[in-house]
Image (spheres, rainbow, N blue to C red):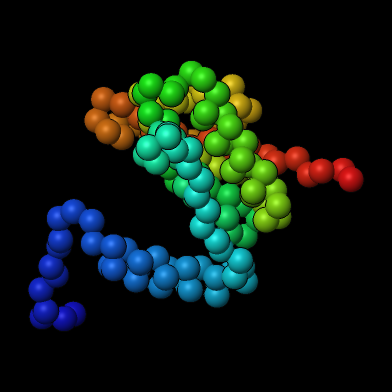
Length: 145
């Protein structure tokens, strides 16, 4: 065991996150044989160029994962979340994915994902305390043409 102290950094440290993500991707790819990982993102901007809706995630090993999906409160309930999620599904399909995953909290959008055809896979209670988080999955249909 090293005598060097562990230094924890509050807040985001992008270079540490990028370094760790790359090392974990290298390990996971070597372990599974899947070297096709790729991030994706999409945004909707207003006339001034400000982002009013966006999605971010990745594909890897026949699976897609939506890390973030956000729509400004003024734009909600107008189909923007649906449009973003459908775009991510199509992108994942084109990348050869057969399933797309997303996590959400009980106070966020579980009903939205269920209406979009996602099925609950797991629940983590007290995340955060007094609430829950859940992982949803949707099997992606292949085009038959």
